Structures are given as C-alpha cells and as structure tokens.
Length: 162
Image 1 (tube, rainbow, N blue to C red):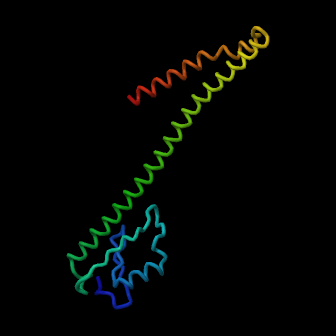
Image 2: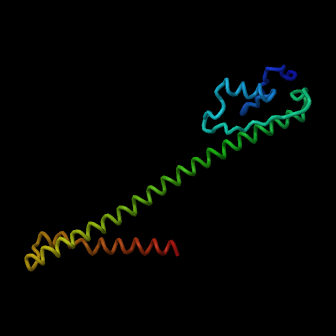
C-alpha cells in the first residue's frame, strides 16, 4: 500500500467486498458527491451517510492496526447493508402475507354478504307472492353451507386470537 493521500486527493482501499475512501473530510465529501454516491442506491443497499472521519497520523494507510480498523469498518458496513436488505425483504413478505390474509377474509365475508342478499331477495318474493318459486328456492338452498363456513372461519379466527 502507498502512503497517505496528498491534500485535495483521496485514497481508495478495497477488501474485495467493500470500499473505504480515505482522505481529508472535505476531499472525501467532494469525492462522494462527484461520483454521485451520496444518498444513491448502490446494489440492494443504500449509503446512509455512513462515513467515518478518522484523525491522527498521516501514516494511517501504512499502519497495520489502522488497516485492521478499515477492514473491520468495511465488514460492519457490509453486515449493515445485508441486515437492511433482509429487513426490506421481511417487510415485503409481511406485506404480501397481509394481502393474502385480507383477500381470504374478504372472500369469506363476500360469500356471506352475497348469501344475505339472496335471503333478503327470497323474503321479498315471499312477502309479495305469499311463497317462493323453485328458482328463488334454488338460490337460497346453498345459504346454510355458506353461513356454516363463515361461522367456522370466524370461530377459528377467535380461537387463534385467544
């Protein structure tokens, strides 16, 4: 490895997985802005201003302890990016599970509401005609099964909450 970067310059150190930008605070900031790296999505992660400005000797790059610190910093950044990606993935899964459960609940409730409408129609026909014909009766015949299915679904949901 070479020596410390001259004023106005930055030095890039890579461990194969990550990259450290070493230099003066203004020089590093200018480099990040010029490369469009501030706040820009990179791969699956995002730079969140994770920049550490180290003060001390100018022989930083030649110092094995300092290089170990850079390697540790790069590993930490990689781990945090992986954790962020996992968190985003879990949020996406959670949203999809919520959508599936909502759709399932909506389907059960829709069948129950539909059964209620058919029963109301049959009651209206009965009031107007004094009875129901075969067509109206055939619409109502599936009602008890739908009501029982909805009741079973509701009881299972209550049991799960208990």
